[in-house]
Length: 60
Image (cartoon, rainbow, N blue to C red; front, side):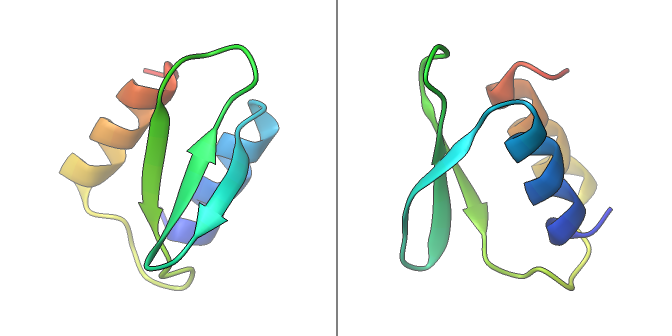
């Protein structure tokens, strides 16, 4: 999966970009926590990174 596809999944679930520097920092209006996601839209997300992000988002 590419980072651009991951961005769409997070945004569809209600996560929004709070700020951006080296990473996009996603926050959710009702869920707790912040999720840092790299800014590499055309690159593939490594499996471990993908699983960790989805777990933090409550999608896995």
